[in-house]
Image (cartoon, rainbow, N blue to C red):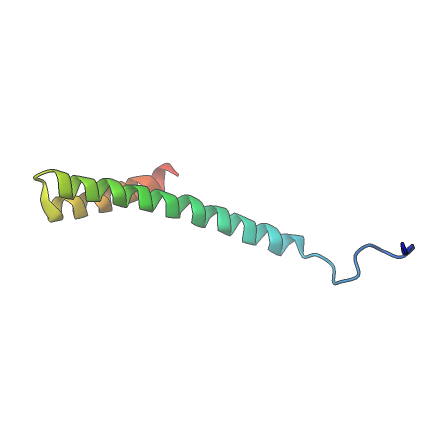
Amino acid sequence: MAEHHSGPVELGAAMDYAEHEKTYKGFLNAAKYGSMILVILLICMAVGFFSSAGMLFSTLLFIVLTIVGFFVL
């Protein structure tokens, strides 16, 4: 049947909230900057493939947009 516990709910080690917050902020930054780089990569691939700009221009565009994106975010 149902057991009645009178002890604490947490039986494991105490939560390290500072480390949890650090990990969460790191994940958010990785997701944010990773998404930015993927969007920039897709834009530069479209410029390189569907225009007469070429590979060199799209590579330079990728570098410039990535630098600008890091400053904006």
